[in-house]
Image 1: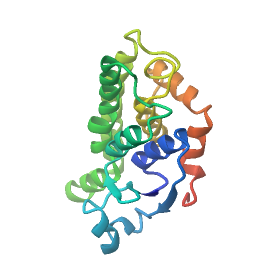
Image 2: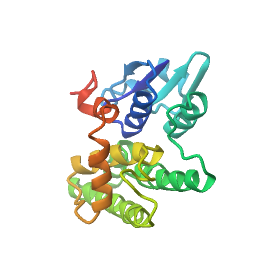
Image 3: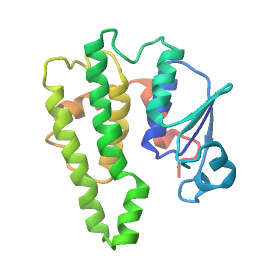
Length: 211
């Protein structure tokens, strides 16, 4: 198994946590996003989108971190990262989607670079953009966490996809100095997760390509 990634990529971070939880041996292949290695012809021939992460497992290969999480869950189901009941799985996927579909895509590096390069956004405007979408998404996330089904983690007391998506997004929010004091449940859950070895090992600063 191989995982192409970048130490600060929140999507690669999600997959690293899943691999750690499931105890899977994986060769991590770092690509420098800043140096444009993800756009090199050799890598683009593997992953036409030119994004990280990209994962191979024998003859199986794929981009898109959420597809990887689903693949790992179906192929290596123990320990499980999705609830056993349909309603629980739907709730976890809803929470995951808030981050993976609504926050991350508009706040990632390529979008931030584009609004600065194409529309002349200042550093301050870029930060305002970043904070806006984090806060919008986290307001909804925090509200859902108050529905009575949250425990030590996003769904009950067991780590799920939702935690794997949340922790890297909060890591980035802290890095961009986004105010998070209005999200006590989010911060409590992140603190719980970051006491676990599987999350600590996956931290960006603990990767071989960390700057």
